Length: 487
Image (tube, one colour):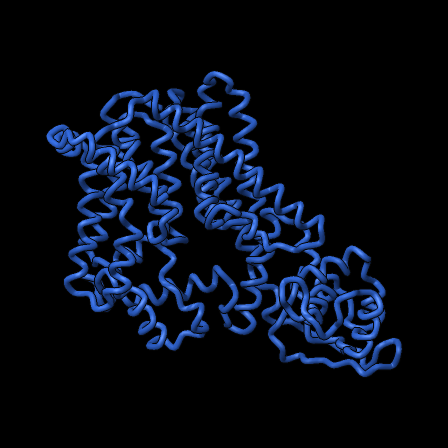
């Protein structure tokens, strides 16, 4: 990405049509606002104290200047953009195929990989956004019945499946927002009022139904867990260990009851090549993985519980899979994971190790920083330092290595540049979306929705892959608005 960005800029310099470049940039309000936003990073140096991070941030954000400048100065023609999209889709097909094959090949060899390790060519979060954008392109090409539309339909099905299977929450959120926005756009184009209102009612009803179902599914089940009378000993006569004050649950069941550890150690070592007191393939303690897995199956932690495990169960535990439901894969597994997060948090209030709960802590710290620095922010380089102070002041339960930045681009922008920077950032996207709607450029609208959706759970433009994705397509689409034709 760095090399390609530099070559683009070098090409512009060598052509040296600077008068034409300036004229084209002046016509492009979106790019002009984007370049102004990049300039805010230099203003933020005036009142920053951590210059090491400030210059690092400027280096990472350089595509936010170079790519809009290049593509506004020398706009691509519609035909060139179409060819670019086809190459983009081809590269996505190849990379998703390699990722999927490699992941399942490792699993078949008995090597357990976390689902996040499926992405071999960069951050799984940023790659998920590329796949969702690929789904948007193929869906729109399919609906428009372009040449080989059936092939685009197959690609749309594949990218949709990959998005849900990979369990990247940011990707799923972006995909859901994309589908909802395109459906609403389609409704708005209808001429028959009765049909339009019927679809509106259906959409709102579906949204409410899904929302209520999600709340009911994720709502903690173990807040007032009633144990009742617990057996004293196992079938072999071993006295059980019961900790009814424990706040650890798996699949809604308490983990720390009916534990006969000597029986488990003996029977497990008979069936597994990984000793009971060793580590599983995810470098977790095998015994704790075993306890959680038995709990998820509603089995006691004793010899009889081990006897109920199949050879496949043993293999799953050796791989580090802690729950029977984790075998489901895909979106269902991600939702089960979120449910476990909420159950654990309701029981002990500890957000560590749970991505969504940690984000809630990040956002709480972000709001605290904004309240104390609402107008000018903390400067280009002091964002992480401000968060460190906020976590200390709020007495956060987050471990030190989990005390990260906002994981929300809107909050990060406000924290960095204050209210003026936030207004400018919002203005870029308001003007962009208005341009997409005015020109009926559905692909640009889809990109804008994906970008904005990604800003909610992530600091998308704080990484090179994220900022390159945003800067590139923001510039390309904005120049398309002036050509009155869609790619």
